[in-house]
Length: 575
Image (cartoon, rainbow, N blue to C red; front, side):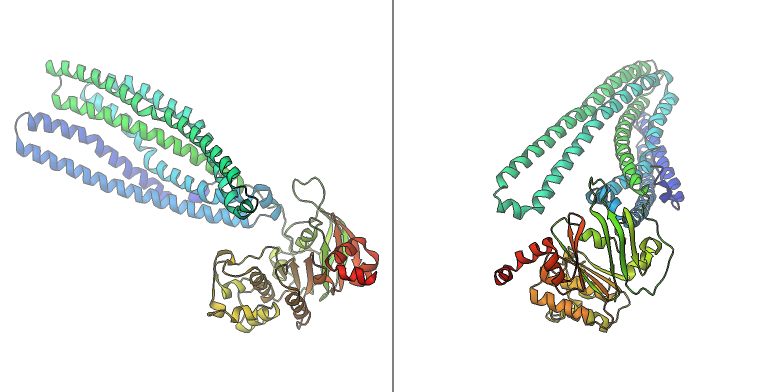
């Protein structure tokens, strides 16, 4: 918790006032048994109805003031907890967005989502409960014991004997059940993972008729989860009956001691009832304290998980160069790249140069390192060895924001965000004019897509762009990159859903731009890279060919295999 408590700064007043109002409410609650005792002794015992009414009004007043104090305490506690966790979420998201791709891959996207959502919510709940109950429950327990001593010291010894026994029972059961609940949480993670996997791959399951086997596997995991929950629940369920047995046994002793003292004229009946009420208050508060400690333990564990992410330092050092006049020349010098945890390098000894405005095609089989290569240019990943240079300067020397502002990236997976078409295009350049947007759409072959919509640029986009086809999404993401007017454009297999004619029009339109960017086209289609100024052929992370289409067709077996597998008629014609 210490690692994230700095985000509580500014809520010191709420952290003080919340517990204070809760203690005031507890103090008023401790007075209630005495009021009841006076009603029994002086009102009912003497038949004084006006006194009974008067004391009932006092009890109502105590209840109303206590309610006001409780609501006020809840307000301050909730404000501090919600404000603290709001800051924590913002800081966590900002920190995650500042991490490198390698670090995000290592930690895991699903884990980061869990820490952003359920972990932060658990911390918020823990902070809220802590501000309200951490001082209140011990105050009531010891306050009730002290009040019992003010009534009768000998009777109060029953409290001294029963409180340690109750503490042992409550906290003993708590310590036994906490590991059990951790096992329940682990089982829940497995069920959640299986559910997500089945829902994500439902089409594949149906295609391979695996529904029955997956249902059977899922049932097995849910049954195991149920078994763990029942075991933890049965142990936890012992708390109420065991504590009530102890309390009732203590009450029997208390009543017996009280009866003897009443008979001897030392105590009144009302004071015995007050002692009984104090015993009940102790039981309730100890159970609350046990629940509080369980919640605080969970919150502390979640805080550790969040703090572990916040302690991860970005392993990419930002450069200092703020050059804003990039021409777009790109050079690789003996570059090697390797993903975290991978045994073999993804790229080995890659060297080439692309001049400003040139089109470079990158082709190769699946897993050959095409995407890895282009990801090194905007520093989404860093080279393990060698240098990646833009305009003759190592990319590590540039400020990442400055470098990436000059690069348009269209990733393999076309991602559109919920909003409108205009809002998605403005991600590329918030200051783009209406003319800039339509020009980018025209080059990306998406102009007809937008004009075909009723609201055109104001057409709503659902989450993930699910109300557009795959080809439409790809064209809109290309347009978003072009709105930036980049000096370097990276098309990472971004035309896979386009037909050959549209793909060709797109490449021609990019070449025909007034100031064409240095374009990298990653594709498995030979037709997409055929007319590039230079083609790089990758195989298992190595560059096995480099040149124009005609040159590679004569000298590179890997390129020949790819090309003739897609255009078999030319093999027949040549033969």
